[in-house]
Image (cartoon, rainbow, N blue to C red; front, side, top):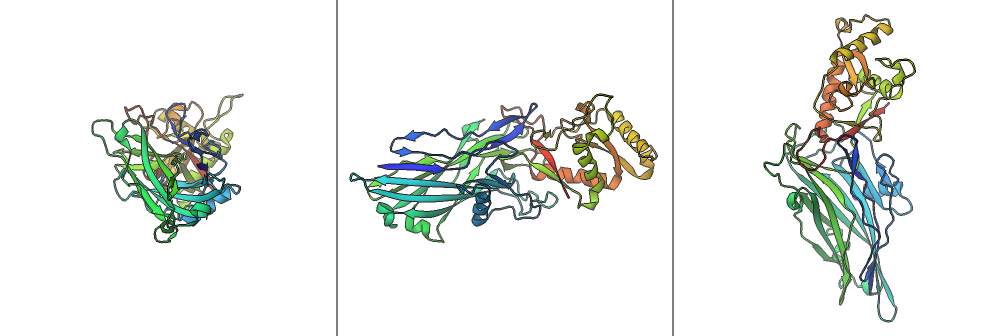
Length: 425
């Protein structure tokens, strides 16, 4: 008799979408008992912003594509008790560690064990190896993701002690809940190898490609969601264990023509974030303005009436911004707020005479921008060149992280990506 047990990563909220910021949850299966196999699963938090067991790396110049050892180290740092979970750098790069135990008991009660660790490193095709939005660009137009599985046989006893007679099989499928069954496909066949082969350093890897064809006539962005899943089976001469699926790995494919790369894919594990650094002198004043708006909104203009308080969103995934078509409504109110801020600072209210421009936050390209914000926005005069640099930087972020805008599609997929701003020093 075979029994399976598994410790795996949890599926995290895939994306914050549409007005109301609803979350698409790629929910993991409940603990279940299969015929001849029992599954034990250690769950992680599914909170998007502070998910216990989810390691977030924010080094702006680090390599985007994971090395298996680097992945295992990051996951173990987040989950030292189990060594399982997931980690990500950005929407084009993530990794996960799963552990499986296959237990075999013969008619005499002798128990054999096969312990397997899968390290899954994923990347979307067409990204360079740099997280910095100013340098990471889509190199190709593609709706494709590549997931590489590294297999470690950590224990094999009893009937599994003969590595030439025992085997492990890994299969992959892409489940496409919407809009079409063909929206997500796995183009790699089942990888069946003996334990000897999996232990060989030259053959302990398997690469799986998940892709989505563009469907003409659907919508401008032609969005599709897919859940990449792996199935693991183990066995030996005369005995085969039933397979067990991994947790879903959420992937979104799109063909948004307004992005630099006309088509692409992202992993749906976290809301993307825009890094505004004080160390970047080319937009220092813009960063200072955003920092003040997020952390000291009471000091910003326009001033609220007595007894009222401003609450400016965009500083966390709990209070994100959502990209939309640029709306310069209330332009006069924004300009007036900039003049009031200059006057309060003892400067000439005609800031344009000093080579300044009016910067607003939240951005005018978000649903939370001044046109829709009431008093919950800030306007401040900044050097014109810095304002231009910051605008180019924001557009690069939109392009490289494939931040889609509302309204995005006529399909049933809610699209309109949420993101937030991280201030660094």
